[in-house]
Image 1 (cartoon, rainbow, N blue to C red):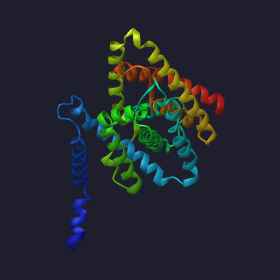
Image 2 (image 1 turned 120 degrees about the horizontal axis):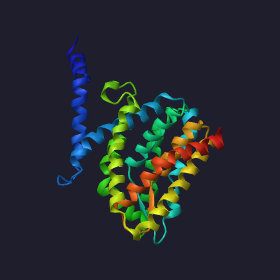
Image 3 (image 1 turned 135 degrees about the vertical axis):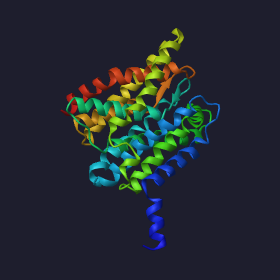
Image 4 (image 1 turned 90 degrees about the vertical axis):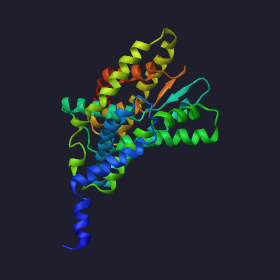
Length: 292
């Protein structure tokens, strides 16, 4: 073996790849305020988000284009819907981990219901989140005084790191689908740890609930259900199976949240609570009715 081959064998060995992954995570985490109490949890959550992104990128790279172009287009269309709610008196919140967690929970549900979703659904998390953020960014540039600007400010403060980690995994999977699977989770079951944080947020949101927020939270949940139903319908039109359309509906319902009062844990936590406990079975039943 020549020197270049020996160097290649060393750089692409599993220990070195794990080292590079940790190095990348540390660079991304450098953007997080050291005093942020969530900082220690970002490393573990970031690893799972990279794994989910990798699964999506790999699925996209290994699936024939005709099978994925319809669902991908639907995910992009669903990402445009925040435009309907950029209005005076309304605020928009985007949480990158929310559609990812909804995907994992809905995917597990459809497996248990013996109606598994297509493997390409993981890639739609990136398309959906990317479209929502792009729409808000463009809207904020056109009118800095809109709710889009506030949503982007929140995104920059708290969601940049999860978004970067999801995208890192996605492009690794897309450009290097044959990367050793040992680097990431081998199944979505191992990614379910992501749902621990939303569960904690839901509990904290319930504890912080104030009577004055009831209308705002109710409006947000209603819009989430409408968004989820739209995702189920469009997913069926795009050729997704019953399970696939239900999973897309759950993801769409959590792509963004609309509220009328300033942000608090109550909005995110309770919206997630309803969407994950009641929403997923509802989207599945709707998908069976529309697409079964």
